[in-house]
Image (cartoon, rainbow, N blue to C red; front, side, top):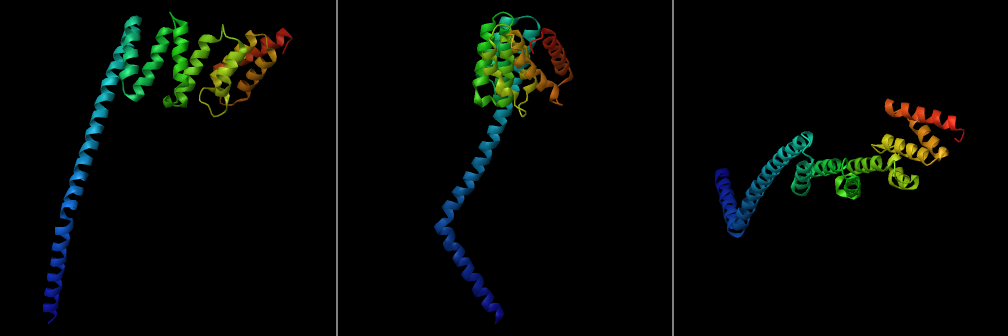
Length: 217
């Protein structure tokens, strides 16, 4: 008797499944196809990204080789092309190297290039700060202390990667501007920071001695 009820239950389940398949079968097939297509498209995109990154890496190495060989115009062109067309990470590296290639012969162009990178939020704060410091390095002999402070003071916060370089540039700029109070303040900040690099700390100590010798600080 139990076998009869079991057979009836199985027949009912089969009938229910048949009705469900007739009603929703096309949707189920379509969903399965979408999943397969989606996975395939994602794999294809990952492959394309890897291929583009490899291509950009090779182009970056070629541009660096040109720069090291003293072929600066060709290197500038190669870095500019990579900055425009390369994959995301290499675009940023290429922009920095392109600016560096400008520096020996066209300081204004280099500063402009660094400023553009520093203003580009998509580059990320570390890259932006690095570009700002490099621009400051090119400007420290000619820009006013107020301009240097406007450019670099935000970078001196304890959580910023290039705070040590920014503080040193501001100390030097203040000293050149004969603002010994400001120069001492930046030098003291360098020396009181336990994470200041030894070289930066040594230069700050020398600057402190020069300020003391001037009798103005």
